[in-house]
Length: 329
Length: 258
Image (cartoon, rainbow over all chains, first blue to last red; front, side):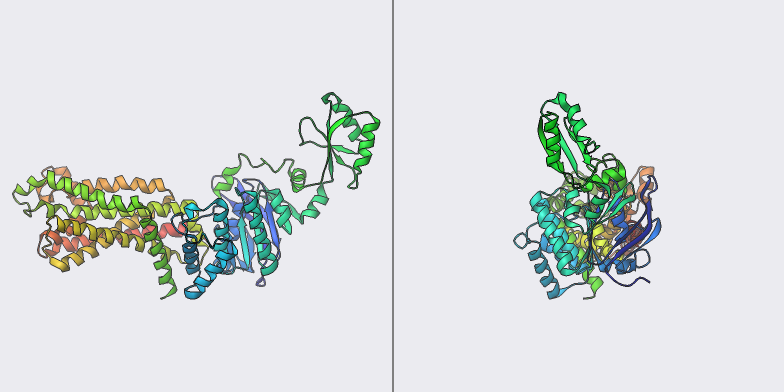
């Protein structure tokens, strides 16, 4: 039996649906205690299906997984006591207030009386909903719903937290507030966080480690820095002042690296041969060849470059048309 | 209070609060059966002249129908909300807590029973205001409320089953006309022995809703005529048991947590 800790482990996890392809196709992963793990992938990649299996809501077709040291198939009730989860849909009752939701959730977890009241107030304060606590949910904004959803997931002081696309559809302010709270949970309370997202920035900013999933397979796993360093180097993008000179610009830039796609139609871009590429050298070379440019930018590698390198596609829009698989899960 | 009982009570309370905060879900089940009652009482009053009609008061004869309609309306409304819980993922939220499936079902049904009983008291008060006199007296009124609770439970458990089986609010709403067909093909407007059309009398005889109506009616118009009362209770209990087994099975499949 695995030790009872705050880790998450999966080996060869598979989920097949009757009329669809394998939504999750043999993934292996390990999330250490106190870590924020970002599970990044486009719509339909298998993120939510994985979360449903790890949170015991969906039995795996094959493979094994332990959460907090408990087997997700054989020890479902213990797993559920250990985890908190805010799933993709902020499933709230529009006719109940925030406080009533907390009361209901606490009671379902066996927390009653003064402790329930104390915990509800504490969480309302923590997520900044004290003033709105007695208002019905139908009047809440998307950000408020997400914050309440997070509070509900924390009612029973879980050691492991699953957040399935917690910031989808939120404005940048709400998103940043949620990031801060999640970061604090991991750092101050030692909660292990398994976070799915389709936002590169979210994974980059928040996650200690990132797993990238595509078509049910994990295609990359490591710290954001490791992943970026492994697959990608800085890219230089130049836009010629005269579109006729695009060829000349390309000829200069290709001395410094290999051409790369994915930028604007008027741009020429190369991935630098070395990470310590000097922009000044490139400017001098362009000047020497009398090529005039209107824009010159250096792009640091991103997780999208990692995704591109591993799958041949950019993350943005990669899941279009694949959402049905995810919905099935 | 025991944890499971407290959980069921909290879930039942939520069902009541949610209904209470949607005026349409309160007003319609109270008003619609009363309107139909008023129309039928006015239009079919002459039936009391038929030889063998069991009472001189058609109002007393007809008051049984709102009790059945009210239970149906409460059931459909509550189970539409239950199906919505499935669609929105609220059921998944509950499934992630240690709450047992059976507690969830009891909470849902408990809330619905409370609503049905409040409605039944309203129908009774309106009926009395319109001149209905219960031949079985106060004890009969109490037994009528118990019977109404069982009737609501019978319909509700089938509604829960439909909600859990399909997870679709549309499917549960679709039950409403089906239930109403059963109601109209029963002895709601005329005693079975006075139905002259053979096929209709046959359908009304095999239709369980007839026995529910006749039990309510017996408590109003007869002085403790036990046969229809016991038959009504037996049908309501039987339907409740079948519905509850089906709903429990559907719940186990729906909450396929490990």
